[in-house]
Image (cartoon, rainbow, N blue to C red; front, side, top):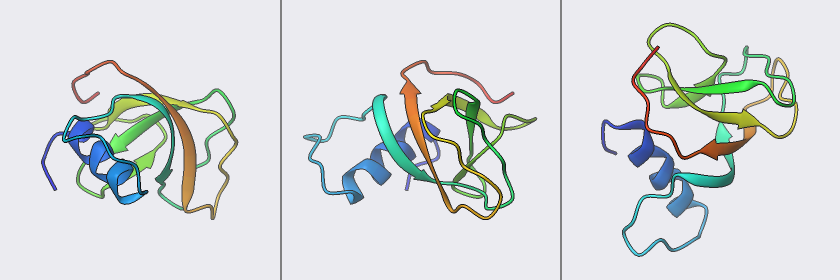
Length: 91
């Protein structure tokens, strides 16, 4: 996998069975891996932890990627995220 969070999200998308023709996908709704202890409400901001290769609640060193379209509570291993398509630096 690449080091850029957008490229990793595209990789996860490809693994889900969709074809992108080699182009990265930066918008749409995707089920992504989530830090099991993170609690994210519907409409809550979602960030990407590039070191752990999973989503988390916003925090220092994490990359904002979108908003949750379904609640993802403690113990959940995935979160459904609407990617915002905006390239951002780590918080």
